[in-house]
Image (cartoon, rainbow, N blue to C red; front, side):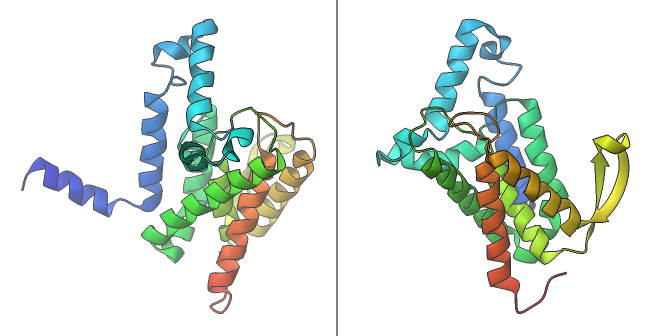
Length: 226
């Protein structure tokens, strides 16, 4: 069997979240925000390259509603673009902690489609509220929030290890519904202070979370949650 056949077979066997992770990492390493690229070294040239990169592949709300094909695709391409290592690794951590059980319940192909559609709609919702903004929005957090919403409905009693700053970062285990409802409330409170520009798009988190929860409810309400 040739090397190309082996690579194809390995790709077929990969879990959906592994494929998404690989794509996010590949896009990050190829972009100007990666520390290995010249643009990431800093300076005006580096910042200009990053801003141009985000404007091309991220969601710019006031351009999105112009109706061009390129702009309409940006809520999808933006899911694979991240502003730095912390941004990337934070999203991937949540994807792998909560995505495993959700993918097992949905199946690989449906999970990937769910992730992409939820992420697209979450960024679309943010852009609708901030329609006049000319600042680019990037990142997979809307899609990952959809995974969290689905997890809450499907596995509310699953126990999740959390690190709480006010308890000296002691690892404590809580039911998933406690952790995720607390997370949702924080996003809700922060969304009220979202600027019409870059930063943490809490509104996109809320939209993605709500869509994920509603999808899981609509698809699995007759089967019961785990």
